[in-house]
Image 1 (tube, rainbow, N blue to C red):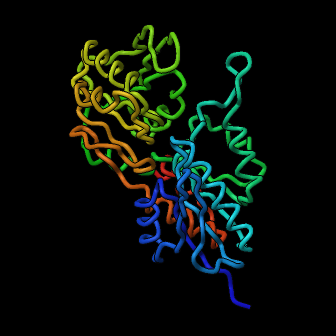
Image 2 (image 1 turned 180 degrees about the horizontal axis):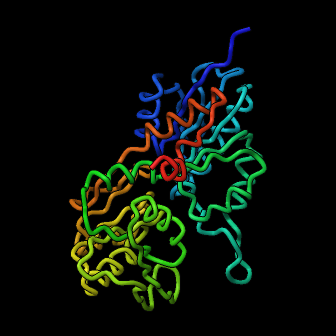
Image 3 (image 1 turned 180 degrees about the vertical axis):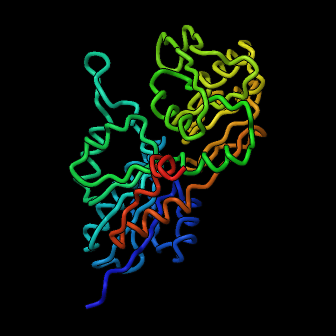
Length: 317
């Protein structure tokens, strides 16, 4: 009996990232095609045998929802092709902002997506920087929740900034920012915002002193960039020397690119979990390929992925 092999496949949304992950892993990307019909319907097809293999399917579920449907169908096809173990590698887990009933008569979409992935046949989920970490509890299968700090921290260290202060663009990001600030032994401030409705800010205040400081804003998602750019402007108004931002997932919808280009931000550093729609002189993209390739290898070899999390960096410092 042949031993199981690792095979990495990609949906159409994250093809470049999946190819880079495969390169770092030392394998060619698996052969699969997405057949499309004239009415817009599509059908994933594996063009090689995956019977008994460890199959890793890379696909971010950012908009449009076809990306999620494509991933579900690829998982279903792999299960029906007798794959031995199926891991959905979801660099950006869409619908994660809908993790609770914050008003009457709404869907908890992230729980629904968890159910769909499990029902389709996924044995394991691998993702990065969930908007709400408790979403891991929506799954009854293992979830590997990777941390972008393993990528951002070395970049920040190489900046060599002396008066470094970290900022959270809202109260919800404080735990994430506090861990990174602790690593550097730096101070932290909070930008407290009040919203009228989604993607619209009513007011904002700064908690903490930023005078003559170089500020680093950290968040998981940059959508319209409204919060980010207004936070940066307010920090500069309060006396900061400079403001740069680190956001894992560049959703970048609406006027995001224009907002960033015209902002006071020195730069916006993002990961390649979602492909950029256009270029922007202030946006720098860091690759997650090596991090995911190590996680995939360790998963296949039944090794710990503990070293891929920020608390390992804190312990070793």
